[in-house]
Image 1 (cartoon, rainbow, N blue to C red):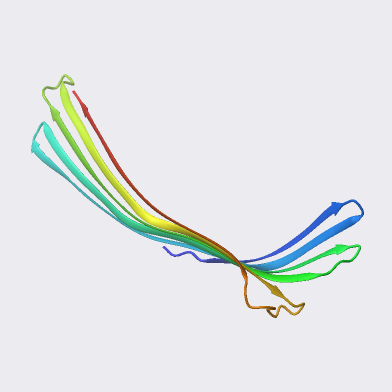
Image 2: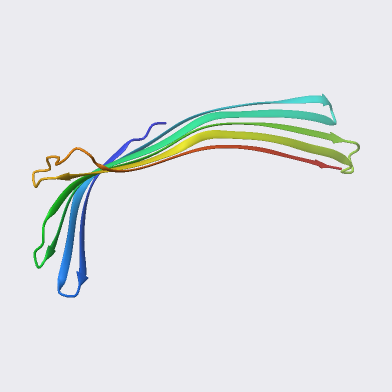
Length: 168
C-alpha cells in the first residue's frame, strides 16, 4: 500500500509597501508518500444457543512523509540586494497500533430479556518529525556558507484507551 506522489511547483509572490514592491519567486519539488499494513483477526464462540462470546484483534502500522526541496529568489523594486536561498522541508509520521475487542451476549428468553457487554482496549505509539533547513546560495544555486538556518520538531506520542459497557 505504498503510494509515492512526486510533483513540481512554482511560487510567485508580490508584496506592496508604499513605493516598494517585494518579489519572492520559488520553484521546487514536492514528494509525498504513505504506506501501511494491517492485520485483523476474530472469532465467535457459541457457548450455548443463547450465549455468544466474540473476540477481535487489530494490529497495524502506518506512515506518511513529504519532502519539499525548493529554490527561492527574493528582491525588491526599487532595487535592493537580491538574495537567493535553498530550502528543504520534510515532515513524517510513523505509528504502530493494536486493539482487542471482547463481546458477550446472553439471551434469557425470546422476549428481549438479555445481558450484553463489551470491552475494548486500544493502544497507539509513534511520533511525528518536522524539519526545515535553509541555505544562502549564489545566483547559480551554489551554497554560500556552511551553517544552514535550521528548525526541527519531534513529537513522540503514546495513547491507551480502555472502554467497556454492560447492558441488562
